[in-house]
Image 1 (cartoon, rainbow over the protein chains, first blue to last red):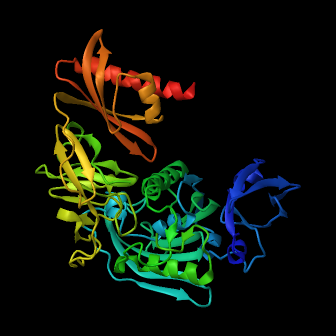
Image 2: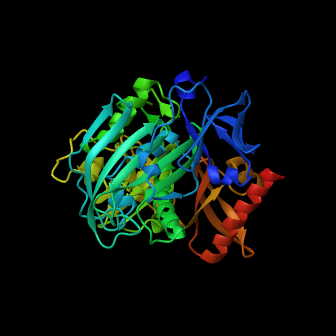
Image 3: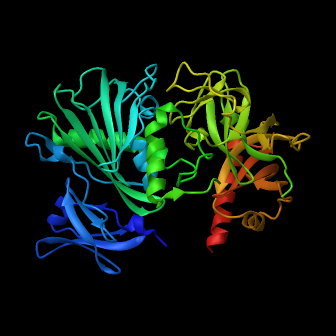
Length: 280
Length: 208
């Protein structure tokens, strides 16, 4: 039995362009079969109990199997005219959808998992940053995050200290804002939209809104795919597969403040699909 | 189940500075050899975020987790957390260590408080390890000359001649692993083919 709090949230279920092009996607959401397709010019998501609530945003189709508790979260930067919006495509990962989001919020792994790209020894220290649960939007935010990166983005030349902000916008969706190598007055925006197929299997859709007029689309996608495939080798080898929400099973440090806040936020809101509640 | 020594690999397959996955009766292990040759077997899970330590890397006398680089030293104590270089990790952050000894070219594991030594396998030389998708009954059915439970031994035909072989049995979550040793006069290439052929015959027996 899936909690109503879980059912009343929005989840990504397809890339909108593919459905608009006439492709039909037969997939799963929260363990139930669903179909995403175009009917008379409108995108429709059908489950066993009939049509689901649907909205289209940030290049993706979002569905809510229950009664939406709120509108889909805003990403105002997606509307800025000069940004390049990049749908990266899908990566299937054998892990809890919550573990996939938590890994996206983590910077301490950069030197070891994304070696010589997003991090490199001996630059491993994670400086103190700020984390809060914003009451107006009910989102987890991490700000004033800094990290040394050998190649922060496809467009970066040489190492820079990158500034980050992280934002958990939905139980299985997060957005990061990072130093844009081409502009000092703007942030690059990267999202991770995770479709919970089951509690231990997910489809991950990275998405980007960048200031980069130069790099070919294929290279931008290849860069992000490379990063995420490196993450997958971690995500499929964490024990247990579910994300432990009770303390005792895992040992966080100060560098894990975002992860701690994410776990607390999930627990407080009853968003426990993909979570392990009792220490094993 | 009574605790007992289980063979988890052959010495020749674990050089200095390398970590590999091991198992002891349903427990996943990270088995590794330090730069100076010290052998250890630990619970295959970093206590920080649950990552398998068998995916980690050996540096000097330490094993580090591949996820965040947490460094573990002798007896499984955490020595260094790269995200906080100035911090001395609390002594409570430890990985559970198992008993791990090398004997007759075989790596044996057991719980840390295991008494005694692993069983001796004399008169044979290490050959190779092989993983099978079938169970032990299928192996015994296709090669009746092999006798035993945890240690199978017998004289089998290799290149038309009778040779002594010894197969050390390891039951894994995914199936069965056999660590094979053969008589010192046997041709190792021919004996290796015999092992591979045994695997194929046993797996086909199940499929049939």
